[in-house]
Length: 334
Image (cartoon, rainbow, N blue to C red; front, side, top):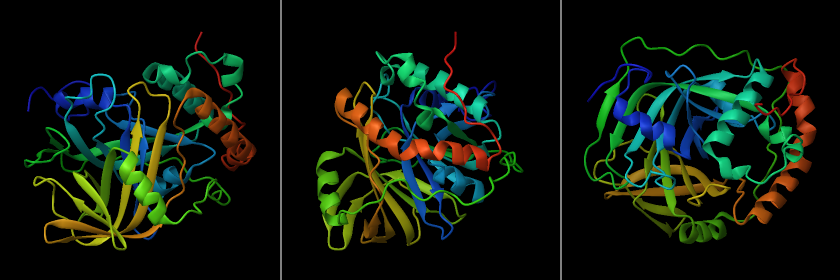
């Protein structure tokens, strides 16, 4: 297993570069009904080296609120697109979430700093006076994930059994910050197109497909999909022989892609139920989730941000007030 000491939270040190270099990881949370919802999110090793952290915008806090309500989450590091990632292992982290939103200014300062370091092309050439007006995007809630079970494979084929690591018995995560007062805001986007139309487009165009189910311990379990076919009331999926078995139940199928130089991404997600039938996964779609892609050329991404600003900026004051805090400022290190 190699050296597991130092700033790795006790997990195998060979996995640390995957956590550090990955541009995106699938982050899965659970709804009140126990359905997994999965979205590609940029991961960061925690500041004390014992957690793997992701963030979500203060103006669209749904995934953080799901994690606060049910801390069982997972992260799949299965996206090989990005600097030095083509030979990286595929790593599944199941863990316990701690939601941090009691200091929005500190959260925002951290996001400005670490996102610019990890994804420099997203801000390259952008005047700082423009970026300072993007608090609707930079104001952040952080979710710290304490790993309790890690599996990893050599690649997305999952053609061999996984190696695994377990946290010591009794491992626990710190409590989340108190939930804000008032009601959570409604979704800022809705999906009006029929799912079969979206499915055909996504399967043909988006290269990375990942299936999330719920394991016997109630944790989301996110796995790379080897092959996807639109069929009947949903999809037929093939997983590698080394994928862990799972019982029929609620599921989420997420597809995404982004360029080698990350300036945006395109995503599609479908929720429904999944079951193993004759060695394949039959995924029955209930609905498609709203599309929040920001992809294409810089001009298209910029236009998308302008549209998002019109919808999200009015939420800033409301969401900060729900947490009894002022609206955070976008501040850049000297």
